[in-house]
Amino acid sequence: MVEELMIDRAVVDGLFPADLPEPGHWEERYPARDLPEGAKVTRIGPSPTGFIHIGGIYVGMIDRDVATDSGGVYVVRIEDTDQAREVEGALEQFDRAFEYFHISSDEDRNRGSYGPYVQSEREQIYLTYVRHLLRQGKAYLCFATKDELADITARQQASKVPTGYYGKWAIWRDADPADVAAKLAEGTPYVVRFRAPEGETRTSFVDAIRDRLEHEANRNDAVILKSSDQSPRLPTYHFAHAVDDHLMRVNLVIRGDEWISSVPLHQQLFAALEFEPITYAHIAPLMKQIPGGKRKLSKRKDPEAGVDFYIGAGYPADAVLYYLRGLANGRLAEVPLAEALATPIDLSLCGVAGPLVDLVKLEDLSADHIATLSGQQILDAVRAWAVEYDADLVPVLDNEKDLALRALAVERDGVENPRKDLRKWSDFRPAYGFFFTELFVPVDGPADERLVPLGVAPEVVTAFAADLVAQYEHLDDPQEWFDQIRALAGKHRFAPNAKEYKKNPDAYVGSIREASQLVRVAITGATRSPDLHATAQALGASEVLRRLRALTS
Ligand code: GLU
Image 1 (spheres, rainbow, N blue to C red):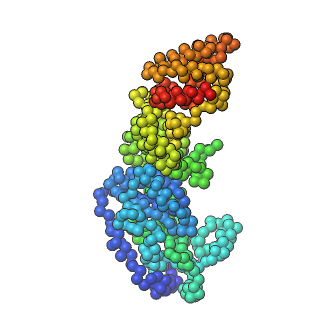
Image 2 (tube, rainbow, N blue to C red; image 1 turned 135 degrees about the horizontal axis):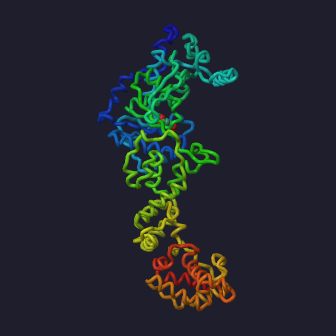
Image 3 (spheres, rainbow, N blue to C red; image 1 turned 90 degrees about the vertical axis):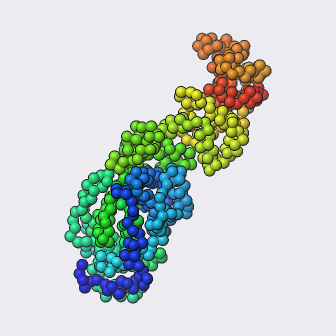
């Protein structure tokens, strides 16, 4: 740093409020945390420029685990320095997402003594440290206009050198203080840039997941404070990261691997600010299989990238977490759900290649999980989901609570292999809706289109159904119950089995298969259903009769 090129301390100080605290003030205000040896203070920094990504839940879950497991603290900090791109409702969506997945924070915008936890409320703190660097010449004012910067980039591209603001291209790096004073006098807006140290060529650091990584040192004079014509005056991500993680006494930064290339700059910023270096763990991103390869799961292209996809469809949080835990630490996919949820994620076992998010696998795992729940647990979860996402279903469930439980008990209670017909709560309506009078659409006479594929003549349907209605007995024993249908079917010239029917089709109106399918469609509305006798039992005799009667007219 050439002394005579440094702008005057008075000029620097004149750029800031007179009562702006010194760094010591903040150091005292945010003391080192009193935590057990080895405790990790982790954080996530979602930006309200969009809704949270399933990757945010993935990283938040890891942060939460590592903090809890080490007796540390997990912080949620809102990184809203890009105010122009802020999206309405984003903060509420973050809360909803973390709550759904039970990822609670120890400190966030509602609690904690290392706040504010929203970057736009931390202007004073950032300004203190910007002034501190400016006073020492470790940062400088840059008045380059957009056009000048575009021109620099164009010339760099033409001469095939790396783009950026460095070396001879950094036109304000070594500007004459008189020129700076003149610009300030004119009121020209400026940004503050970090003066990248000279002479460093390579740098390395130990990543908690990837071990030692070596990189070219940063040469770029990164912007640390955005334009002076904006209010509040906000830092860039890089500067805020250094200041916030230092003052919040974070000691382990777990973040996406897209930030690896920024570490050389971050190391320089920490050094210039005289902050203790911090440990990083760079997480491999969640990926999606595409024809011929894989790519990062994309918020723009993939609905399953958004957290609301899972919440809206009603994937049980535990199933999604179980799946994500298996992606983070492969061995957790090999143990039962409860064990996987209770075993902390081990950073050293996280892979460096991005794991694939496979919705089919997630759904299978979710169906397996739901199959372990009781009818009451399922009903409670479906109802809670429906309040938000299928309001019409709520009164149906409330009015017919017993029926709902009887319906869910079919092939679930007391059986070795419970039905796996629910992968998510939104599957309840298509799978179980037919049990409820309000949701069931009875067949519309013998020619109903759902009956057509069975190929039984309408007059046969009517006669058979009329007889069944007249003689129906709501028998407890499945065999006996079915035998009455079999007997009636025989009487109405349905063959006793498919083979017999095939041999002599002209002698019959169909086989017992068609006859029982008529009954099934009448009772359930579909040709596939849970066990028919158990379903009829759950519905009760009068409802079964009402549905069978619909076949006759
Ligand atoms: N606000 C940053 C982001 O949205 C956070 C990165 C970090 O964790 O440091 O990606």
